[in-house]
Amino acid sequence: MAEKGAQVILAPSRPAIAFPRAIFLAGTTVPPDWRNAVIDSLSDHSITIFNPLRLDWASSWIEDESCEPFREQIEWELDMQGRSDVVVIYFRDDTEAPISLLELGLCARSGKALVVCHPKYRKRGNVQIICRRYDIKMLDSLDGLAEAVMDKLAGKGINT
Image 1: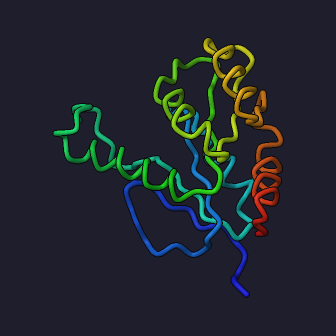
Image 2 (image 1 turned 180 degrees about the horizontal axis):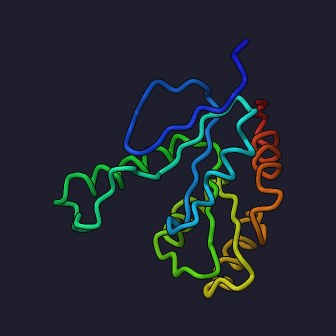
């Protein structure tokens, strides 16, 4: 039996996957880093957590496919979202989060999405309508997110 304890993989690394059950943490990247709290709350479970945080990110990178590290980051994110059983998408109240909206759109029909959307997020109405249309669970805060992730995995017949 596999040892318990989450495996956390940061972008752009691609190590061997320790646990077949995986989640991806999409959403805002501005401080404070919400992902650490989520990772801590899931650390006792035998799951792989893909964290798109890139420690060597440089603001000088051009957001164009011709910029190799930028392209590598986006391709890693798309690959790991595809590899994941659950994609958590977080919309904080003080961000525009256009990429998070894109990520929601990409996975809305997949059955993988789990959304956290602050009540004061500017585009909350759009998020609510998409979540209702595609039967996506939406939380108002990070409270209860770990339980919702585990419930979603269990609902897919995945035990951790």
